[in-house]
Length: 621
Image 1 (tube, one colour):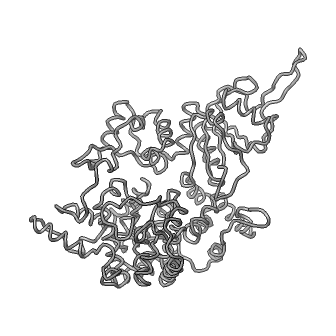
Image 2 (image 1 turned 120 degrees about the vertical axis):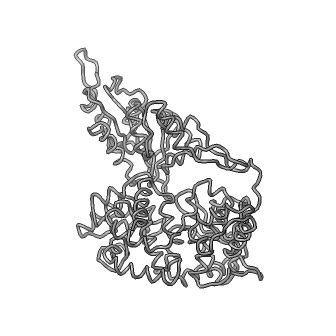
Image 3 (image 1 turned 135 degrees about the horizontal axis):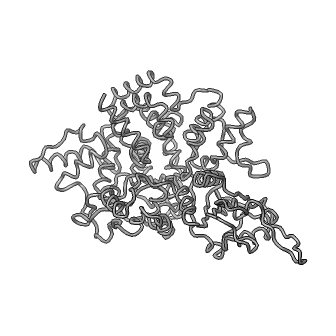
């Protein structure tokens, strides 16, 4: 979302997530680039890198901050890998000067705080919502930075003036006999602004483009119908692999495909998803599930039901193998057969034995015998110990037999592997070829976000895990979080409990080099130095209530203390929020409405239910 954007953005001249292309496109004068970068760094220092949540949001969410002429002003762009890019035009920053750059950086950080990039596609496609988001953010920025007007460039104000938009809104409604809200009520939340702008006969945006350029709606196709049948997963997986955005969201984000009839002008009509799915479920005699299972568990459960062979690929240490084994154990009530291929010999699968007639026969290993149901987990599938063992594995995955003998009651096979490259480094694994790929019914790329490892760590290691997770979320950037996997987090806890150096837990890169992640802040947290997390907020809730009241008295949009509390609540795990429910309720009641509204954006259904209950209790009290 670009600074000052009104209505539909113009098509970008280069891909806004291609970092090399952004830097190479019509590069600005090197001296101008250097001045713009110094202004950006000076502005962040002015905010205070250790105190301001503006700076911490920008650094934690935008590890790459790129000067480029591909944007006219500045923008925060979702990169597609779980991080964001901060793009800024060097000439624009130099023209604004330090105060103007501070305003723009604060503006872009608030887009992240308000989670505008996580809004639903029907909102992001609506130019009125873009204006509403700009009004909300600039209203907060003007108050928090103590300004009365927007930054000026070449004698003209830059960006969307919230007062000017409100004046146009008030005049439009008054001219048509409608009652406008006061300015304070109008700017209460982003969606309040959006809803009020939609009441206007002529909202302050350009007319829509050709309808062929407007993103279409997802119809009630077979993938949606199959949501309540046993073939839903296969159809959704295949659609996601073909690049179907709705199917990808169904697997990765746990969202349902929205079912709606086209409204006037091709815009989305009423969302009838729940109604249609309830009718489909009733017609086939099953219940319409309230949630969509996470992708790894879903594909493993489908493999058990349908005798599938599944390939899961994901970064090392994210917990995929443990989750697969746990899901199989829950599904069958017994452990799966487990083989780690780097240490699996042919003799671990079968061995030749002489028969009475002088020939050789093959004796299967004991785990493959017996009538009980059995799934197999092939761990580190693309790193076999030798070719002989891998050749036997190929027979099992394709023929469901070993040495020509059928494996009785084999229910599923799950192959788990690491990618060929991770964080720019080549891993010692082989690449899959087409012949191998065709042996699998379904393949799934696993992201760390697909594995609910944080809750597992909290349940198993308690307060120590809470300390490590707070460090992981608040004290290191996205690149550092990529290096510190969930497996590494567990090692950090265990080393801390043994009193051993924490550096031993990080990834060893060879030649005495470990993963480039500073551990000083984690050591400070373990030593009890002054840090702030949800546990600390709950422990000193009276003092934090006073700080939030003072911030609210100073400004209806809060202050730095409000941002600190908001960031902690936004990053907390659901189990932590439930454990400190009383403190959370007391603190969230004193946060600005704009911040409270973000807790329902992009959250899981369980988190939305939690926050809905909290907000309902607030209204009752």
